[in-house]
Length: 389
Image (cartoon, rainbow, N blue to C red; front, side):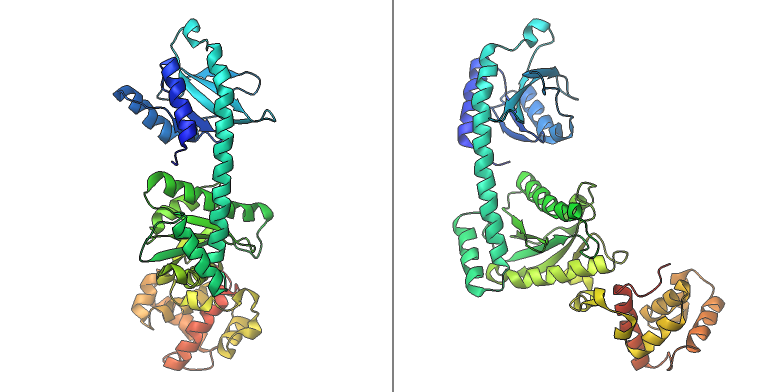
């Protein structure tokens, strides 16, 4: 969590006047500031707030200056609303109170102080918005086609301490399948970028930057290798589904456009073949699909396929038969392994292969024929031209 000295100092002064440990949360119930918590009990309370506050329901302060609630794991707490000039709730000041009605009645000084805290929270949000806008702009410039723009962005990111210094950096591409994406789904890309930035800020010492390009594609830049499973946990959240991500290789910061380009190919492959790739896919693991993703395969028709595959696709409408051939080729022509992978008897496999041989113009034992079928079928699969089981 980023600290803002003026807000922290004001909160600490108020805490000493009231002799209570205070916490400020924003409108999404995330902790954004807190006074010093000295005792073990106070520190335990603060840890609980930092961990769980964003999962609590919003307090009932729409028509009252504050409400007293007892969140899970805490004693009674007053939630004092913080308002912007338009009277919109922008957060709450949390004050521990006693169990009696008299002790739960907040002094007038507290509600008055809430106005000052609200002003500082607004200033903090404005400053943070400006910083984020600047970071987003530099991140977009970092992956542009113009070398001078990339160099200037890399220098600014380090000079302004927006990105941690490191020998190598890694780009991540995020987004949804653009073929049928709605505006709401595109908006989830920016939410995924923001959630990832917040997660890194709150759980790591690294500084990460990100932004969203004009084509609705998100980009993140990490000063270290990305842990795919951690990123996948963020993207599996219903709030950002169906956003998927691709991870590029490590490069120098001035070569981040190269890492981004490969991250983008891994991301493309993941939505072209979503059942074959996880929600987060790296360039190092995506294999041939990453190379084939350079092609506009989503626009392919059967006429764009190699002749042998085109004829096969035109003659076979059985998903099981196509899947059998794909698995047989994946297994290098090993019949025993193919039958095991498909969970069928070997005689069933031979029956299917005989049907395929009657259609295919060529010998399945010929390496050239296998190569054309294997690659051509993969193209057809990525293009969505094969029946699915």
